Image (cartoon, rainbow, N blue to C red; front, side, top):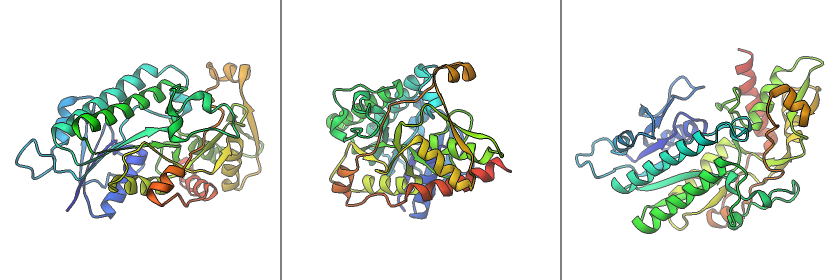
Amino acid sequence: MKKALVLGAGGFIGNHLVNRLKKDGYWVRGVDLKYPEYQEKSNADEFVQGDLKDVSLVSRVFVAPNQLTPNILGFDEIYQLAADMGGAGYIFTGDNDANVMHNSAMINLNVAEAAVKFKAGRVFYSSSACMYPEHNQLDPNNPNCEESSAYPANPDSEYGWEKLFSERLYFAYNRNYNLNVRVARFHNIFGPLGTWDGGREKAPAAMCRKAAELTDGDELEVWGDGLQTRSFLYIDDCVEAVIRFTRQDDFIGPVNIGSAEMVSINDLAQLALDAAGKSNKIKNLAGKDFVDKYGFKCPEGVRGRNSDNRLYREKMNWEPTQPLKDGVASTFKWINSQVNI
């Protein structure tokens, strides 16, 4: 039986990945600070609750079961998804920059070192589209997120800078220590069983929650003018893309994992309203009105971002299949069930 180690297994993507690996017949160890929030228990064969900033914990979880020699790993696949992250309300206010950079960098330093020490198999690292230069994402209708556009570097957030650093860290370990790594840049992954309130939720979850909470006469509030563009990848397509990328032998990345279906945030809000079967109006909130209500500057992020999937399609001969409309409908159905428990 093949064995997999999922770091960040209590998070949204990590939990879905554990479920998929179990369906594939793997023995799975999950590691996270917390258990999955919206599932009764993790489906991992073993779940270790702990802080991956702790080097002793990392060393312990990297030793697979039934290994008599402590310097032999035994895991066929390692998925490093653990990070200090969240939605715009967490990443772009500036209030959490030090924690975001310190916590995630410490985790990745520990993981890269342990992967070499314990002779790791394949190691997948989840980077983010937030590492792309801000100056390539000023035009909401024509953003440039081709993998080769990453330099000269100019991410729009400290979260993006840390992701860029960690990409370079894993590639350096590949060059110097032959670490068998795969690096992918996620573009806004969404779906059921993900955070939907509290400030760390991503835009699709926030829009679905707001739509679920609306009563007659209410307006659905969108931060900013709503003309900023993004693409959003449904979780099932994300997991499929990660596994295909990790298990092939010819390409280590970096590569985008996302949807090429770009929409404005106002259009995303309308999809949530459509999924809810509601005809409420959309209200954009920005500038002084936003500051007066929330006490901080409106965190809009870059003006445009869309996944350029040409390289993944060329290397993997595959691309996502779930239309955004269908993914939003599935996500709304689940979030609505949470809101109206």
